[in-house]
Length: 401
Length: 132
Image 1 (tube, rainbow over the protein chains, first blue to last red):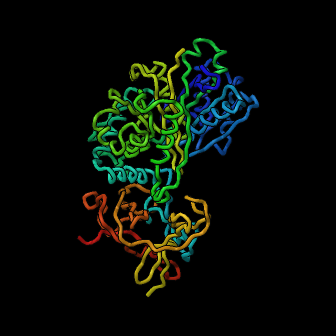
Image 2 (tube, each protein chain N blue to C red):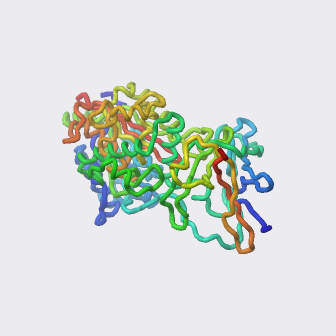
Image 3 (cartoon, rainbow over the protein chains, first blue to last red):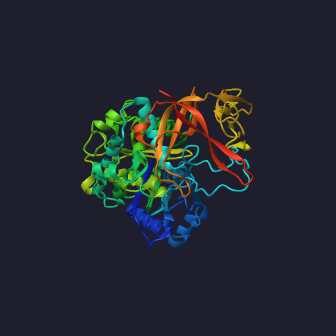
């Protein structure tokens, strides 16, 4: 292993779901202690801590964790970056190592969102008083629901529909079948928030949130945490052969934002920044999409998963519908996608998501995924996207040790 | 006739209601909000331009669940008005997939969205299907 390689030494996630008896520090502690034990190291070995939480970054969740697990005096970076928060925390720890400021670092992400409902979109009271223009649009009254929608299920519904308009072949049923796949996958994942199989009829007949996304086609708000210990190649060489064998190589780590495109301030463009991140990641890793054995991508809604097949170049441009129809993205297909159950079924505790997906891929590369193991997995990709926007992509490779 | 005020400052009322945008004089990028600079090229000079009132639906969703106080269902959409993308609701059409289609031709329409304590009407906009 080259000295300037980056590796995941230890990694862990909590069960996603409802944890009414645990606060965010409890959840984060469980994940962090799990990652440290998995890597055979302690808090005293960590030269840097990156703490991701959309809801608690401003409350210093990183220092709160230190006050339970070890106040070692090392720098803590509390980060929030929409749904890319976890991946951003991971990148911060990696950048500190690449910069030579630490040889081992901790990244964790945590959120408590069970029962949170819609996370965006403003409520509306009766209009009263005197209409007075305010804000960047000079609006005299709230515009959510009057000039389009700000709710995520509606925004991502349009993103899937726009793909359908450009290339054809989409339908309510097609998007529902993507969700059916992910709900089926999660039946093998004991850490998923929802692990019950759902039939196509149940998914299509469920409560409609924003056509064509019904409730099970939306990411599941839930509680959870995930944590990773990252390490330089030089430092890893000083550890035991068993630690070197189980370490997972970070072949690419990329974060992008959305470059300006004509319609990007009207309907968020989740495509260009994902394609840019994937392109850079493939270059960094020196591989192509056909080398991937599994992918965990950001299926915040069923309508989003479809467009990311294309954005991550898992299929030909414009070919996402045919690619899905071929069965490729089922766990027994040519390119298994979201074998964890994805955000729709495993769940989406926002800050944890971008580390939990790395845990999923790393667990397969280590051959430790039990009944849902993708046999012989050697290379995998993770992807998250947060509106605003930020996209994180990681490519992970099995250790040759 | 009651005094009227547009819901947003980029809606121009009058005999032919239409939308306007800030167009970057350097690169041509268009924006509906108050600008500090151009997000495409970074320069700071803008001119106001009229946006065509006819368009084509590039994406839509039927929002059936929203925050308290927001009537549902409603149809949110992205409309391509001669190369400029516009966010709007589709109005004067049932909020039902059978009456909506990608690529459908629409035109700008206005509607009263409320009246304040002084009797001033706020006028909003949406896009309605063009007659077949």
